[in-house]
Image (cartoon, rainbow, N blue to C red; front, top):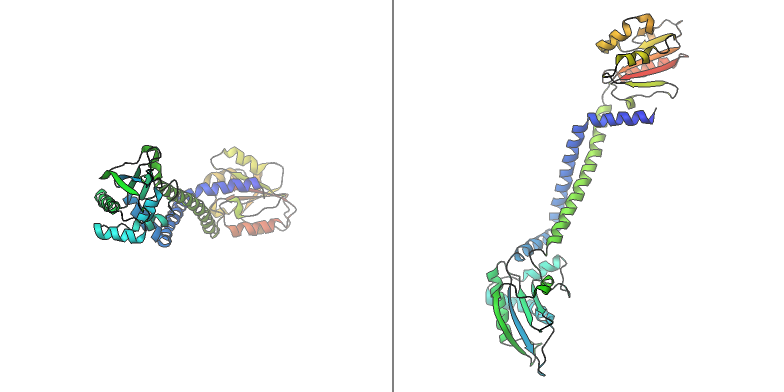
Length: 355
């Protein structure tokens, strides 16, 4: 069996079943993406809830105030991180929540759920940022559900500083140089250290990329499954549709003829060489009109025509047997029977499949 023929026939099979394959691919892709979405929502429910919380909080306007801390020797305190680390402790958060009536403590756990820990380059929703040029410390709050809540929280922390109730300050003096207000006070070159509307974009991009990858994977799997299913449905049929529906010997002549091509070509395929004692096999009940006319106009020209080798006289010994197959019309059982009978003759076997 020629590999080139099989590849061509498989390509024709794909084209003939293209709608089913595309439909199956799209359905499987949607199921894969949808299944991934549902599973992610179940497995990562806490993470998704945290993402949604921060996505809303980071869309709001922050509230800020600025301070300078003067130490006993007159120098300026320069460690801003100690402020937001202390402000984020559970006891202080709970205290501020009671004073303001605003529940915002969830923000820190939400950032941890998304692995957004405080580092030198990211200070989180409650941040202390020092301007290296002036040693002014900006305390920024982006943890509430709206700008007004952020302002209430900022004012409560400012009052905490005014009362000097911070254990790490000791005898250092805190001076609020800019009162709490809504808006950004952090210098433009330090804005990247704190969250904003764009902070969660990588999470969105990651989710989108994951959906695209799974969608493409679903299309591929869907195409494979659709092809396999189409093959199963096809092999359940009793008719010959493609060259891979039957077998032939390496010594056989095998041709595939397109009905759209010239009848002269089919005529040559059947009658060449013209001097052969030829038997033409074809299931009579399925003959196409134009082929019937072609091979029956002059019987002696082509050879004996019959529906079965079993009909031949026992003393008739042809030197060529032509088996004509009509795609989607000829029975597989008929072909197998005729192929077995043909093996009993010392004759060349020529198979012509009409598509």
